[in-house]
Image (cartoon, rainbow, N blue to C red; front, side, top):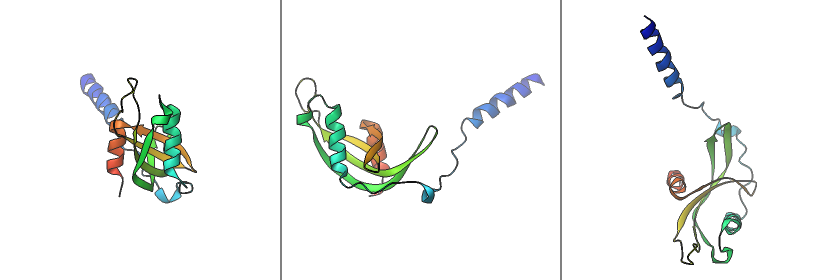
Amino acid sequence: MKNHLLGLTITTTLLSGCASAPPVDVKSLNYGEKPDNPLAIAERVEKYNALDAGSIQVKTIINPTKGYMQITGGVEAGWEYCYQVNGKNTFGGNTGWQYRYMLIRNNVGVYFARDNQAATLCSNMKI
């Protein structure tokens, strides 16, 4: 009997960890104003983090659309923006075009993703 009760407790605990997040009321979220110039916001962020700011090139892949991210502790809403960046690496060669994803609210980036995570998020965006 104790073994069955222990098994039930462990199973219940494991399954409760798989519970889905509560539904999000997308109409009540604060998306902020649509970004005036998302490309300039992306360039500013990329140049700030670059080894060689002068080498940074940024191009838009998908124009901003309303979106949100479920994160630990809640939901971040804003305008999803997908772009690619190219710049110099530590050897002075170009890195090649790399995907970036940014969630922008009130002309400020509030969530960033790069490389594979960015490519996945960008592929999920509606064009």
